[in-house]
Structures are given as C-alpha cells and as structure tokens.
Image (tube, rainbow, N blue to C red; front, side, top):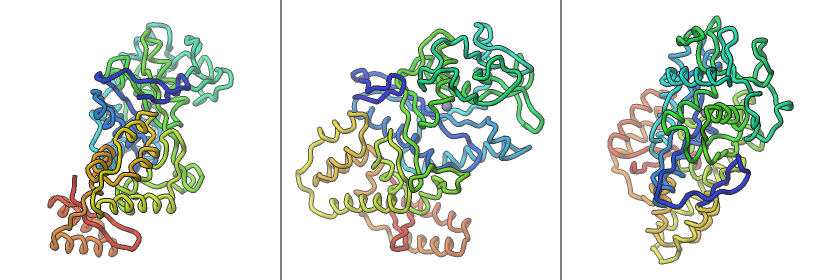
Amino acid sequence: MKLYNTLSRRLEELPTPPGQIRMYFCGPTVYQRAHIGNARPFALGMWLRAWLRHRGYDPTLVHNITDINDKIYDAAPGASAELAERAAQWYLEDTRDLGLGMPDALPKATEAVISIVAFIEKLVDGGNAYEAGGDVYFSVSTDPGYGRLSRQKVESMEPEEESTLKRAPQDFALWKATKPGEDTSWDSPWGKGRPGWHIECSVMAEDAFGPVFEIHGGGLDLVFPHHENELAQSLALGHDFARIWMHNGLLTRSGEKMSKSLGNDMTIRGVIDEWGREVALMLLLSGQWRKPLDFNQATLEQARAQLETFRNVFRSPSEPVGDWVDFESALDDDFNTPEALAVMHRWRDHELLRRALGIFGLESIADLEQAPAELAELAGMRRDARDAKDFAEADRLRDEIAAAGWEVRDVAEPPGFQLVRRP
Ligand SMILES: [Zn+2]
C-alpha cells in the first residue's frame, strides 16, 4: 500500500503486512463545539485504521486532545479548565456520533505535563533549548535541517510570536511562564507555567509509541509551524520520529476557507443533526484526502443522493456484479476513496457492497429494516420538541430511542426523519 508523505514529497510503500502501523493524528484544541474540519483527520484516521486492519496489519490510532492553549485561556478567562473539560466531552460525543468507533487512545495534554517537563529538560541539557525569564525556547539554529518538512528557509519563515526573550525570531516556546489571567499552571524547574503547543504532541506521541512510529497525520495547516517544530524537537533528542507525514486538505465553504472569524463555519454536531452522519461521511469520502473539499448545501445534497443510489442497489435483487480487487487497488493507491466509491457504484452484489460500506462505517445503509411503530411515534414527538425549541426534551427522546437500539436522523428534504438500526 502506498501513501503520500509530505516529508519526502512522494508516494511511499508501507512495509508488507503483518506488522504494526502506529498512527498519531493531531486532534483539536478544545474550547468550543468542534468545527466540521476536525472531522476530516478524525474520519481519515479511523478509515485508514479499518483498512490497514483489513489488509492484515496491526494498526493503532492515537488522537490527542489539546486542552492547554492560548485559545482556551482567551475563550474562558478564569475558567479555562472547566471549558476545556466540557469541550473535550463535546468532541468525544460528536466524533462518537459519526459512528466510526473511537481511536485506541485520546491523550490530553494536561495528563502529559510530567513527561513534557522531562522532555524539555533533555532539550535544555543537550543545548537545543534555553531558559529565558521563566520561558523555555527551542533554539532553531541548533538544528541544521530545520525547515525540512515545510521546505522553507529559516530566514523567510514567519515568526510564530514576538518575544524579546528569544535569541532568534524563529525560536519557539517549549514552556511558557504563567501570565496574569491564566488560571491553570504547573510546576517546573523554570517556575510555574505551562507547555507550548508543539511539545505536547512530540511527547504524547512518544509516550504512546516510543520515539519512532509509522504515520503522523493532521490538517495541511499544521505542516508549519506545528509539525515542523514537533519534528525538530524530537530529532534533537538523537532519534528518528514519524516515518510518513499525512496532511489532509482543508474543508472550504463555497470555495472559501471555512473559519469562525469568517462566520461560515459548520460544527460536526450541526452537520450530524441537520444531515445525519451518513451524509457527512459520504461527503468526506467523495474527496481525495489530500485535496481541499467543499462542504456546502450542494455538495451535502450530492452526498445524500449518492447514499440513495447505494440504497437502491439493496432495494433491487443482488447480482454477482463486482470485483473486490478493484476496490482494494483504489484504496492501496494513496487511499483513494473517490475512486473506491466509483468502483462501488458499479457493483450489484449486496454482500460485496455491504463489506465495502462496512470499511467506511456505512454498513447501516444496507439496512432497510422498518422501526417499530412506538419508536416512530417517539421520533415524531422528538421532531415536535425540536420545532418547539425544547432541545432537552428532544435529546431525552433521542436517548430513549437509542436505548431501544435505533438512531433517529433528521432529513432536510423533504423535512422529516429516518429511523435506522444502530450498528
Ligand atoms: Zn499536534
């Protein structure tokens, strides 16, 4: 199987199975309901894990939660820890509702501070980092290969933040002394403070896997500075780090970058509630993971139409039409999911199609079973509660239906709902 590696800028062959494939995919900074853009690396990691398992590997996926960050302090002055805790819970709920299962581990930065301090101490002892006014900075000039991942020259790099304490503008913070207004801090040899963002991931990846592992993933916007700095820190300790760097393309909204500041963002929760998890997943599958993907009304509707096309196959008699090998070659070629979908659209064999949909967590669309009448009645009451903006009651009804083994999904066109048996 081949995957594109940002570090080498080419496709690289994975070792032949069996064998471990250890994957670390960067997760969100938790301070609000997660953006749909966060669903892309999550789903990619989960699908890749399912596919690697199918191919005979022993894959592990670690997906971190950044719960120490400036954005969290800014979003909840005086109560940042509570917000981070709540938003981490939202993220777990929202990603769980995508129905793909969960990563093998979801470490939080707050749980790794002791290892982080020990890692920074090693960098200081080795001369790669220095203390200044209670902060600790990584000295970029000690790494002759710095810029290897983002292919930039140090002189032309945009400094991440200004500080008179730094020896060089591109040096970056490993440890930040506590500032007024920050309500969480940890002890360290340099005084009270908290870790910088990049060091958190180097340490959580190493805690999970040891220094060397097969795949590091994350959004394209993380190449620089986040991953460039992770790599520099880890290499400075004298060992290799991730072998393959996978960077997924970003989601756009009608061609524009989706962002909170532009007011055109969508949350995972909002998309699942409005369109259902299957539509969200089908849309994510329809784009090659390295390319940008537009998430808007029209593309969501196309995804729903694709699902309907697959459902129609199950509504017709099964015919022995289709070849698993074509599906396999599409995914083995840089995990080309749009090509895999094109292959699946040619199939008429129910068993084959169900198996392929199962890899993507979409086996449920093969399931056309009717829900019992009393559950349909509860779902109707839930719809009424939502229309009346009584979301607590709507959630309670949803949970009651879920406890009976069914999932209620809202349908926008025509307005209504579907009841689907939970996988
Ligand atoms: Zn990270």
